[in-house]
Length: 130
Image (tube, rainbow, N blue to C red):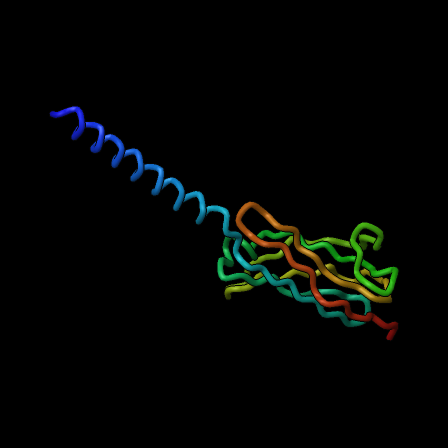
């Protein structure tokens, strides 16, 4: 093989490998959307974690319940009240439930991000004494 042709073949092969590796890396960095919801009744808290990738991003996700102490959500100062692990219940979303916490006030739920999934924080809701 001629040296010029050999150099062209090698350069083309290297560029092809770099191109494929770049595509794989770019796809790997994309985290799936995740949504966490919250509901309450008489001090019980529950909700759902949902994602386009439910088995990877909803099932077995840790949900943390916070009691909001200020006018806005701030996990660095808000009280961590309870947590639960969400479980798929036959559909495409996973349910979490803290049971009866016996606490009242303003609360929100949060799931952290993982290597494959984005994190999310629910809206703030108010739990009132019955």
